[in-house]
Image 1 (tube, each protein chain N blue to C red):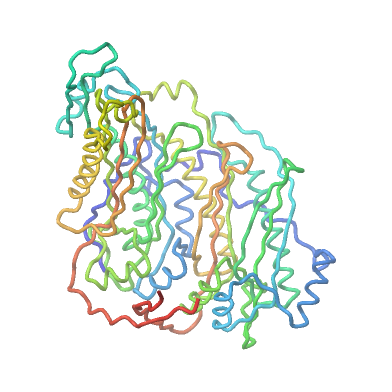
Image 2: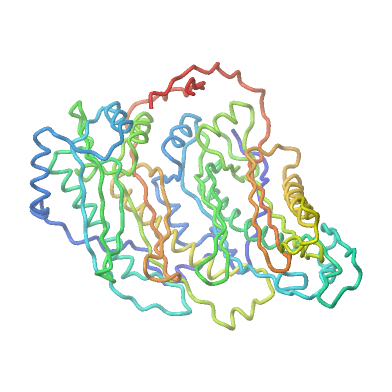
Length: 283
Length: 317
């Protein structure tokens, strides 16, 4: 598979979204809610165990933060018999998530947070908008109790989809989260022509064009995710997930989404606690 | 932990995919692997255990193979009415059992013969798809100079409605701090990660490769099997009646899968075996039974470490 980009895919990541305006971009009710949180009350979607471990890691929750974007997803023509990246759709899916993420970060910024943990990214479709989707990002903003700044290389609060338990474990390894990074690629998988199907009838054989197309699509998503990590000067990405969804485009158009938490290694040697075997005395 | 000889499914590059300075890999894969940041599909606890073990993740590696997954030759499920015995020439040495009708000629629709038949051509196609995608994942790991691949995940799924099947491998390539290159330059691989891998090594076993095999048996029902499977055996006494032909097919398909995997072990041990059965009814008691057996080929390299006594614990949750 040494042919360069035979599917016509553009290796460059989609254009970054238009810059989000400042805090004035937040709805009035959001600003009011955040103002209340600044007086000491906090909200959080952390479970009790997560809350305990986030505190144990030296952070305290500031508030539940979220961002959302309802995005009109355009139409892109696809060639029936050709596998290709649908760059307009890729851009739409990327930009919409980025907008939601940026708004969530803005809320965290308002609270003076160092980061956001337990971030979840959802896409919802509503009956009132066939070509529209709502992209939502939410999580719990946290701040270091000892006053150390954990902001990332871009000076923003870090984001991470790690649970409270995973966040604590990661900090024990001497790594610090930098940001939730993602890469996406919407890909159209060619239909097989009748002649192609007949040509290989009766054989068990690899279909190199299909292999290559799917390979390319996943690699593009992962490359874009790694590019985002590069912008954060991360040393690595943990917990990478590769999700595949057809959304509402039919089975031949698939979005490949790569997601993970970019991390950097802190200074100094870390000794991990040795796990011990236990015998449960519970019934 | 240095890598021993490779023992996984045989990498089998498809025609037209090989070549180039980076072998079989697409250009996007090469570009990604040249990135300086590591990526890892490990969970955070597995990542922590990996670091504690002296392993450094270098990249999330993957391999794919899309196969046309149909077999229309004699003996296949699509050729009803054709004698399965016709497949004997392409199936030499394979498992086969025949069943004789106890009634004699009753009518034209009465099925006087029956056979359980191993579909070796199906097994070969599966091995090609599985082996090719595994080989590509290992190739990506080699590009990174990895010693091994941990937390391997494999998946077999259909691609859209194209009638094709995709074999998909993912894993996290790792290097051993200060370790010499793997034997033969081929990284070892394992489905294990985190504490399961740590405990295996503490117990004195090192991973060699993931191994997997698929066995497929076609059941051509004879009259008794057909009646029993369709619930038409009304004259039977009111007690459970074993369906011998199907029972033996189920036993045979598992034994075949185990036999195939044993051949790959070459004296090593299989740990964490996972067995999956796919059962496809055709009609009139006919069916196809597929058995996939996967596991970790492990090699003993030292005696057990002493295990600390467990600490009595009460959960407050």
